[in-house]
Length: 224
Image (tube, rainbow, N blue to C red; front, side, top):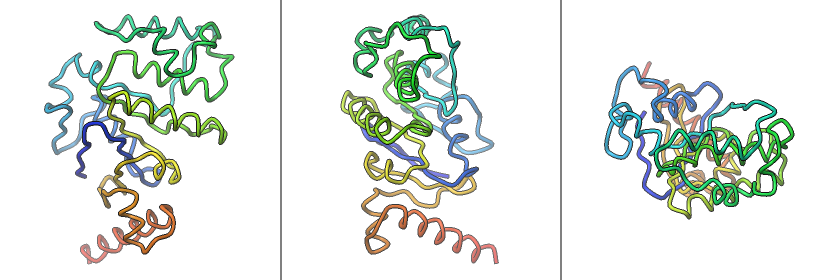
């Protein structure tokens, strides 16, 4: 597997279930160590950054939960204490549209509100990179659209976004570039437009399936 993420872009990681998407971002964020190969985050291996890695990279995990009675502002305050130079909690809650819900307990939040809070917690340390894993899974269409707008706003504020997603419409609307992985290997890295153009037009879903099928056929021929 090989790819690079440019500063200031929204970079998508796509692939079938079990392809290695979450494992890849776990390696990027220092939660797992790769079996082999080399990873560089802002010029250094994740482990070489030590605790500073958690200031450089904010991570919204695929599954996360907080105590149901913990209020929104309490969660942000608690997480901010983990960083030497955290973002202003009130400003951050305003940026993610959670100011009016700051006194709500976690257990009373809607799915979309929980996702907005999880983004706030990923950004509280003031990272230069935010890794967002399956951010809109389970949200209704309105919640997904609102979250997409929030992701664009975060990118426009100067944060590089690595977005893991299953949703092809999400990748097409948000990603500047994306990589498709299959069984722990890179099938293709391109812009959404380049993938669509390579299949003669149509949807990104068609282009995605074509890229996977082409990659698997090449692997099969090489193994023969």
